[in-house]
Image (cartoon, rainbow, N blue to C red; front, side):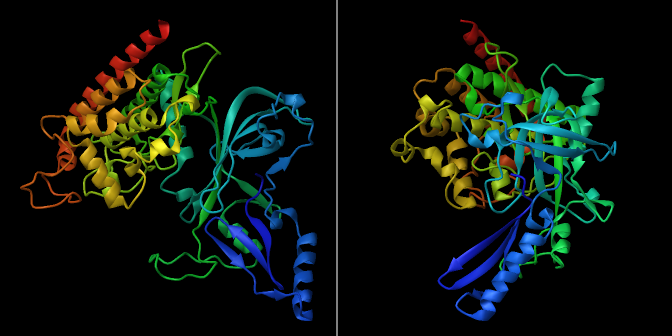
Length: 487
């Protein structure tokens, strides 16, 4: 958990390779044949180098230090379910705006960096370091640690979650909403001390320490590239509250609807008051927050990594591909030449509802592997982008298609979710000005065409009207869900 990159050894017969594992690729040394003297000498030189170099050159993060193991007793950590939760760290968190560093102590790990390539996102629940030993105090917070693609210099990144969260915080300080929202406490780049100077931690810093120049990768993905042709990534760390839990922790369909409704209320407020379009509504980005064991849960929208600022007047952005399969809107999947608006995120909400209602919202409701093979919704997740969009267009095109193909496959335990999904679908795809999701038979085009008669293109002229209808549906079913919980 406290690594910026990894070193490893690979052994194949009498050949040994040193491997340096980075966000976007691997460095593999020339083969060292241990059956030959020269190969053994080279291997020994690698081992000596590793034994004598500073820890940060072994890949360790100097701003994240492991604390002595006391079984978690001193800070109330439960290590029974996940042994990794007994491993705690002090983490330095630097704020780019105030130029101050605050130290925290982790209590448990929410998201480990369990993939070799990519952003290496890690999330921890932590409390503020009290200044001695492993002591900590204050409210629990979430620390998000991530390596994001960056421009040079790193402060000029177009997509900056810290900047967006700071804007949300400052806006809602003056106009506090009823719903909960992600509150930024500290946010900025991770900074390393190099030769008595503080510098931003980037992949360039890693390459420089290894004595190698990083080169931008070729724009053509089919072109072979050298190992050092990798993206420039900046190491960022954000501290925020409140602490939430996976959407899978809801106990029934009524709680799920309430959580989704509150998250979308948060979404609408952030779009209308801050001019920020989220662009990634998914099951991973909506959390459950409970103030007490028997309290009605609340919904929290998180992860503004790919969010963008938009024109406050038109509330849209240029076409781009963003989001999470299987929740991406059809226009997003196909990269249609039409602005991305709130309707793309509302469409993602509909897919979240359908997905959870089909696979089950609690572990006791989950479908078996055999059942899953017969579900039509699986085609939202497998195949090419064109095939996925084709399936969604067909499923969403009419109320008959939607109900017979998708809703009829919802888990039979659910009574409110089918009605909720049907109402959302009607508001989104049943508007009289742009009904359906497919092109008419007499149109000069196919399922993947971005022609003006495409209802997914036409609906761009009716965004406010459709969103208003969707918000009415949301309020109605939130009230129904609250009433169901009371009874």
